[in-house]
Image 1 (cartoon, rainbow over the protein chains, first blue to last red):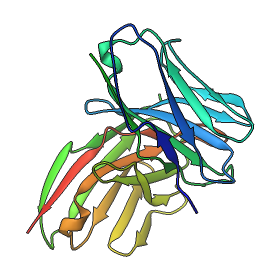
Image 2: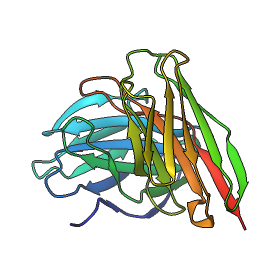
Image 3: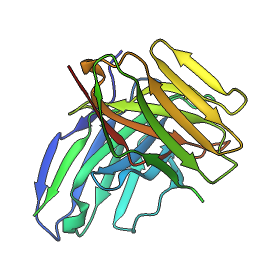
Length: 113
Length: 112
């Protein structure tokens, strides 16, 4: 079974630009979550989508948004990039059963210059 | 509060030794406590998890100890090996469709 696929692996953007990251979940997984990983803050929850609806949202500014398509694939968008947005963005998919683990992709490394 | 506090930030252990990573939480509504392991260049992967109805769970060399009254839980890695060198994250979640809240991670280095 293929794992969670995130594209692209690396991105370099300039301050003020916008960026879109993509995530393909494991087949059959309908929940997709996004996390931001930085050395100082660890893993911080951005949002979670289930059946094309945002079910949970973390404490990030409105510049961070996402969506989920009918095939469960998900995208996240960051507009008006800031230097502090440089991070590893991780997508995770899961079943919606109790105690079902998060299956993470290998992330997209975003660098904002 | 949603926070999970993890310590230490980094840990160096001799091969064959015991690695111990600790986490503490405030929210008594948390009822699920997993540990994730992350190797460089990879996403985190579930290592082991526990619910508060048991005080200990063991899987191979990995053990979670849970102290409900102290609101603390810890990961013990017995007979630590160089291949265990990774970043470890504790996490917690509440019942229902709530997201996992992660600690800030512990970078473990096992040296020969």
